[in-house]
Length: 315
Image (cartoon, rainbow, N blue to C red; front, side):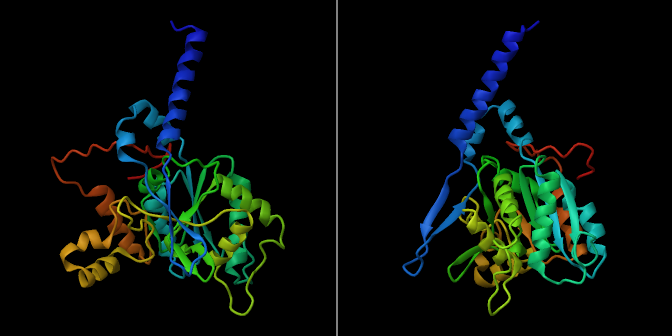
């Protein structure tokens, strides 16, 4: 029988090992200048180092993988009601929790208002106040987006949610760098905390439009800048985007046209997190290709395993 002191010692050893892994594995944020016309730095966030993961014990990897809890927010409107049914039965089952916020008929919103930024503010505030203590990452996507949550968790594996992360597919518009909603937006718990603090001050994050109406994702970036949170572009090891704003079929067509000798490499990352612009039927096809189709006799030996949420019926 292990004594109480012995148990405390083992727990201390495990926590110490996990802390060491986080320190040594904490992925670097790659920074480069965007040319002489830009006076700011462009941030690149990439997956953890493969070799460090391979050299880490399975016990520690399992503990770390369990610590990543993603809350998925499906935000927006869709005239096609079949989207909601398909989303519930496809990729959202791989989230630790997912909720749909239909801006057309959800009781959370003022139906008479078409202000997308006001609706996004309301959604983020509601989600953080209700679920902020239970999840450490918050992923917002459109109804037309398909996401591979396991790849998202791998990207976030060595990231500390107590730090202000705001990432996805970045776009530069003038002096503003923002994460476009078409590719999906990821906020850490700390970023949500800072955002919620600002949202309680209605003036700070009010509509910043002057002449032209600003989109909700630009407004979010402006609001987060007040809190010292800046956009980061998520990429794979080769520098390819992992949050895609287009459907996979379009990306393949573009690769065939631009670089027919390297269609796969030119199209998409092996660690792609999102594709956008999918119909409900194409989402079901994506589920088949990702989670159900298998080569008989081929053994998949992934270094990391992200177990499904308890009680879920994911694939």
